[in-house]
Length: 586
Image 1 (cartoon, rainbow, N blue to C red):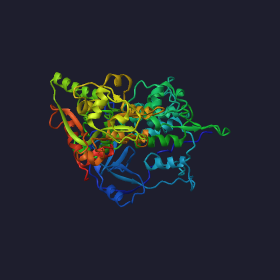
Image 2 (image 1 turned 180 degrees about the horizontal axis):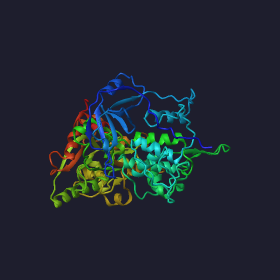
Image 3 (image 1 turned 90 degrees about the vertical axis):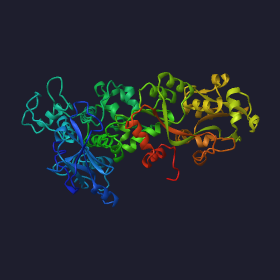
Image 4 (image 1 turned 30 degrees about the vertical axis):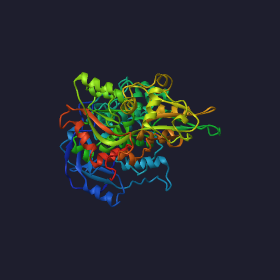
């Protein structure tokens, strides 16, 4: 017999403390697609700041309405303020800080399992509080009516039921919740005209309901036309092909937040197991609670004090750049916004250096994070289009040359580099002061930022030698690292040579063990370090820039971003991105 889930979300935990009520209204970080049915409210929260500083927090920080003390599940504390996403009809209501007490369920053992932990965490997020007797019952299934109820209550919405489903009566306990679910496009019933409220909800049905709620509330944008391949990009499970077509958009958007199982053959010691979605399985209470908790924890996107100060809560510049500078964009969004990695304006990646400059000149983006000076053809394109580029230094960087770690050679001169790449003048490392070993030089493609550096420092108007270009061109920044690693030979002995950007080389150690497999070379007797790059003694030192068109208005988002990047908080973004801040004393 199926057990009831009717009482989930009926009670909120009583507040332990409240803060002074000060309301301020901000535009939502994500504009809802459906007529902006939700808005974001915020208020200063000195209480939360003080309790956090004193390490006196025992529960989750949420918001509640100041007038009737109703908690708001879609809320979070961030950077000195309490934020709440609420139905638009509540835009004029004030909110205050609400701190949840620790939740304890009557059926929770002393050494409770992950399932109980999820229920506890969801309750402390303001999502649920268990059944009438205070039990969690994490392994019970839930019905479609119960699923719609907890999701509409998470949104804080309700509606009066006046028919619409042939199997729902006006007096049913869930009728108003189903009306709200239909009004807010969370669930619309079945083709036979019924809602089938007592049928157990499947995992994919609940996932779609939660996804539609997130879209309606403006927590995320709607995904369209998702495929199995799109789902696999976020998380590779063994049974992605079992997801119904109508649920693919939801699974693609939620990525690894989706309900997952780990299956393996207990009788086979060699079976390493696999992750599965099992989308047609019945959803359990802890699975539903955990998914909603994760959605709120990952998709609520609220601005920091700095974002508000510079107007980024209202408009972010459209950003692009080279591959190596994408960490700048990630650091900026994660600094300026709670859950900034899911901000609607954050690009999924950067174009390559050359392509990003083209996009800037053509007016497709507002600014770049660029680690290289524009190449000659880019400057020519800007002149042709009648625009002028403005480069504002925000960080230190440098061009570097590297070889295999086993290579005894320690450095090259600028003249030798030119002779290698323009004239292909040397076949052996002993011709440039190194060991007796073959020399295998690798280059980058002409539309790369690294090639622009070669133009600036070494080519002197010439091209990379045709033989090198034909045989040893690396198409990506990562490829030139791995190509040089793979170039090492034992019979005959030989070592590769390549070039890149200093901080990219260091940052890629996490993925390619660059510090173990490769080594940097000194140039003209100076080895590249944070210090020699910052003081300019390393001859290939340069900057990373914010690049924009000189025609950008004074208070445009792009100029505001350049201004922000030169603040202490902006320079911390530089550090977070793995680059050298301009002021090394900070």
